[in-house]
Length: 558
RNA sequence: UGGGGGAUCGUCUAGCGGUAGGACUGCGGACUCUGACUCCGCCAACCCAGGUUCGAAUCCUGGUCCCCCAGCCA
Picture 1 (tube, rainbow, N blue to C red):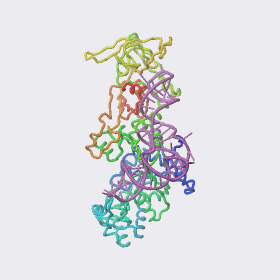
Picture 2: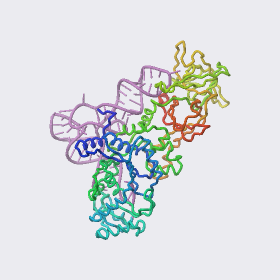
Picture 3: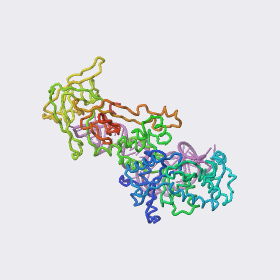
Picture 4: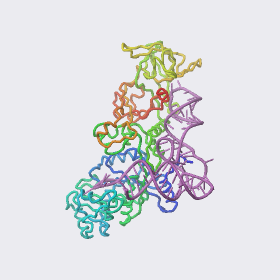
């Protein structure tokens, strides 16, 4: 019934119906309208995929528009980061790169139109007074004493607001709607405020700035947006969106449709909280691989296709959407598995010595870069008498169904030889520090000529040739699947103290020593790892993008 | 106790008066030189109560629970 390649949702159905009814002979237009006051996160990815995806699939257009009407918190740094993130996800706004601030002059004219038709007035009430007269959820507000100023007076006052004759915050332009409306957004909402603040795009040209509810519908109309998609918390704003468009002469008539915002288990995307994480140095930066930002995910090694796939899978509805982390993990693994080269890395090294392998001998063994895809070729792995294996792959007293190395057991060193454990060496405290083995020279490459089978295959590196590296393992930033953080005090309790684990004695195969930042590998039997920009020539740093599924770990936990 | 929304397997989602399907998770198995990948199987849902209808997740009525709104933020 549902076809994964062509997902449907209520917005696609709406667009299909609109197009079918011939409402948009020129095709549809959508837009992704971020405010450049922070970095994009996984929630934005959903909106980006929806808006750009719709335009792509229905032969329409999608713009990137910065909703930059609040100079207090916006900056060019964010503008650039947002552009980079959208491109990284794989979307192209072509020539449609817009700023709401480019419309300031036009918006001013629209405001004057509202004043002239008696639908807007200049109000001298202070912010506190406006709040005090707005009423409550259950009681109506009261009219401003300035509500009935003449059009001429309003017009003159508004011009003076613009020309800088009034101090910061002293007056606002308000829509004249209904102070008794049950919808709070319709109780004479503020349209313009006075703010002496340099704007990242318009500089000091303006000291009055339009509010979102005024700017957004008009920007949409100016750009010919047909479907203005936003999240559910703007549902009540729609009445105002429509009111503005109905009371101003606009070049087109867009319609707003809301969908639910994404909430992902163990993550939090509130800009305020993310900013605190960065400022208090809970994380290293906005692109810390633990951050739910697109830049964090990029640095972590998530391929953009995985995020697009994720957005497709979670769908678009008006339900409260609380998505499990496993869905994202699965998308990342699925995107990475087909083309990612394999390599060997030993994260917690245990030395093994092959007693019957000559001290001075070394050889090269051939390994597949991808067992499922010959086109990725092969590489050679140096082999000698001393190797490292994963500490976890040896147990002196193994439990049932442990297939790896143990005293007297034979296992396969992948792509190398079958080895049998002969002796365990411990230090004075009883810690296992070395394992002795013998190898079967007849099993070069990993197969026994006599056909005997071994149940376990483990990875390894040559102790003489391996390079030391650092590995960073990541877990969610929060302990609770639905983190509730309202104060900075909450934050301390909510944080997962083991969100970052650094392993600094990781031994990697030689081919990894010069891997460029950003490149990604599957460390066999461990997971996908991405070379971090913190790498130096002497030492690579690998971020664990996502672990492999581990059914042994699961079984063992029971 | 105003207004606006939403309730389908554990989670996400399909359904649009005619056998409740898919994905992720979980469980079991096959395969395996990655305990990976892949493949197969299993568990698992219509918020409640009435009503309309031959037939209701879908339509109607009444409840219940959850979310959003009182910025000169977006």
